Image (cartoon, rainbow, N blue to C red):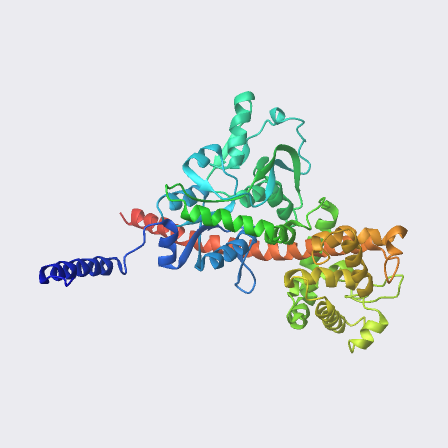
Length: 482
């Protein structure tokens, strides 16, 4: 049946209205939170500068455990990551509430009240709340025995724990401030301007590498989870993406690798060794620093310096009972292959050691993640490349992952046990020594990295404080003029 002109007119009007409505939506911001992020193409993250979660390294490159996972999350969403450093925990939550950031990540442990007001990601990693004091201070048996104010970050989970304890022990005095962070509290304790503070055990262990007077008194709470926070909305799109991302990164081992990278070397703190190392950083390292930087090439010069300290304590005349010599403790054979004539010459030793370490890294199987090849290479530097491959074989025989340093390092001591080394190609090796060797280097390296980060952080704080000081000075000058 042929359509009437009237029907055709109605049809054309409907099509025209539909086209107009569709054109009105073009270019308009989408409705869901995830669609809004995809529209802006940027993930804005509020954070705090810290040697743990986010800072700029010596090459002005961003780094930190939170930053690395955030970078993966932005890639996962197809967005550009924009880090927005703020200066207190209250600033972070206010920025999130006011929609100036989309997410906050700063080694946060959510309090019950914060969980009511915001949404939090699945667990990143766990920490313990610990009471910290300076060595030489009387060690309290219980929290009720602490007779001085306890410093804590205002609004933090640690303050929440202390407030709960204060209801039971009225003698507890709490000094809470949002003008400090955990590292500043630890600095004050180290300098003696604050007697006690409560922080988490991970930041304490990292900070002890350059504040060696810090000691742990009591563990107030265990296994608290570090998380990220987003706004609490009826729209679940962004939250669902966050849940899916964490599930994927836990499953594929990414989060475990990050935790191993940043905290895997943290073990029992050695006060005497750390004091000796920091003293050597001031007195010995400056004599050789320029050569470490010159010959490091693709390596971080601080890692090369850490290897040298572990080998010789930066003594160019060092010698072992096995005949290795110099700053990098090279054998005659290794020195010859690296083109080194005089192992006792500091420059030649550093040049040869750097070349040898790079060669070992290049031989590490490509099945091992690029970030972890260095630890396998260092184990080989200590006990030989063949023994390192044997440790991987033992790891595989036990059903663990031979490409994971976290798994392999735990099997290194098994190379000293007959039931295991008889199953290897190269036999017995001092695997326990190699375990400690790599662990020590990681700690020395981390100390040098954190010292750099601390200097940068203090410099940035100084820059931040200049306008305030200038303002106060101007006000004073105006007042005097009046």
